[in-house]
Amino acid sequence: MKQQVLTFILNGEEVAVLVTPTETLLDVLRERLQITGPKRGCDDGECGACTVLLDGEPVRSCLTLALTVEGRTVTTVEGLMVKGELDRLQKAFYERGAFQCGFCTPGMLMVAKSLLAKNPNPSRDEIRSYMAGNLCRCGSYEEIIEAIQAVAAGEY
Amino acid sequence: MTQYVGQAMPRYDGIGQVTGTTKYVDDIVLPGMLYAKCLRSPVHKGIIRHLDLSAAERTPGVVGVLTAQDVPGQNIYGASGDQPVFNPDHIRYKGERIAAVVAVDEDTCMEALEKVKLEIEEQEPVFDMFEAMKPGAPIVRPGTTHNLHEYMPGMTTRVIKLGDVEQGFAEADLIIEGRYQTTQQDHAPIEPHVSVAYLDPANRLVIHTVSQCLYFHLSQLVRVFGLPMSQIRYIGGTIGGGFGGKNDIHADHVAGLAALKFRKPVKYRETRREDLRYSGKRGVFVMEYKTGVKKDGRLVANHIKEYHDTGAYGGFSAYATEKCGMFASGPYWIPNILVEAKTIYTNKVVSISMRGFAIINGQSTMEIQMGKIAEALGMDPWELRFINAWRDGDMGASRYIVRGAGALEAMKKAAELAGVQLPAHLMAMSSRRR
Ligand code: FES
Ligand code: FES
Image (cartoon, rainbow over all chains, first blue to last red; front, side, top):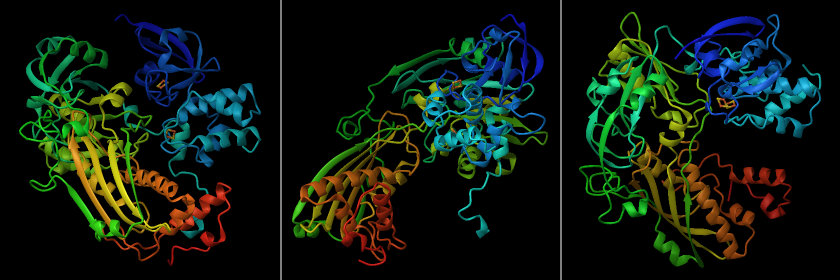
């Protein structure tokens, strides 16, 4: 299949990469750029493990055709740290053990990031409904909610 | 060390998880890495009459194919040592692997798989354990005459016995019967099954695995590859959830065989769909109870008939059947217990381990039975459980002496959390004495 050049901003830096029209953003991130934070859980839009921010909005990178991000801004879990400092959400997830296997964590963090950007003080129900598309098979939901609440409360 | 007890400690590897730097197996991408995809049986049961992979092999980008003939060691794996890596003849379940295509990418593998010519003479399958036990039922294992696991030659029922149930029933005021079934269940970890294999400069086979039990699997892989253990570097430890599902080999055999044959790094991974459809599941259990009880609530006899569906191959099922039977009378002192347990083959995917492996099947059904008994006695279900709960020194079905019993204390705590006020005579009970 014919390859095309795709240019976009990835975690603050411009990247250019050859892709085919059928590749998803998740394929390009993981297989071509080796940005493996976003996980391939289902490749089908069901689990949320592949979630990244596209111009600040959470999207499932497994359902996003790579060529549609031309010129746009993509942030993955790798882009959350600022100057070597953990993001407040990362700190809270880490210290509060908001994961077991950690496979869902990169997706969870990105959705939580977008939630707090829109609603700095979400209620428990608002957190639950905003995060509803992200599955954690290990069942760390309680700790995830608490970690987000702790960040909202200024504990981190 | 004790200063950590009761403290919330951050995970030693937690920074990797929150920064996305932890390397899971599918995160490994190696230069020149090839990919494999498997040809799976489209039918539940049948005999392979013709397999032609030549057109698949000629597809541009395909490096080669693998069949049973490419297994340098023995073409068997699984906890019971009865599953072929690639089935060469008698198909036992839908989705069973027949061959693999290895190519530069997965799209090419898929394209090549569509060109495979496969003819299978379809046979009538059997899916229900009780159908499978009837005379004249389709035979799941070729070369056998019935579908029951033999614990020893000719022994198809595993018996666990304590006391004398007939005597117990004679003493009982009431006999309560119940039949319960637990369902098949998938583990569904968010990380699908995946393996990466390659030869290192010393010609050792390196495999990055999602295995939950490296040494079990290493001993199976040694046999498949025909290599001494010292020639395999089996690297695990980071998995995206397992729940018992990764106690079975799902990908390492295929990736390893491909790396050995083509001498290139190979990644083999299952899609979510393949995992859900074809990987092992928690098996179906049917439990038939006949329980004798005194009017005052004391359990005196429990006769259990247990049926465990192992699917198309043995897996750990014979062991699981025993384990379920041992614990299927719950944490209760019953002086007379008889368990008659069978493990039955059907044309379903293989039954494998899953959380609380087999124990929770028998324990949950016993709890339903306890509810039924309480109702029949007109007794509060808490009271029935308190009266019978194990005390230290009681004996379990397989004649183990109970030590450190805690069911009573756990129930008291559960009542407190649920806001249930238990009567004083129950609160006064202790697991230390009857
Ligand atoms: S991998 Fe994209 S939603 Fe599951
Ligand atoms: S921590 Fe394992 S899936 Fe969420």
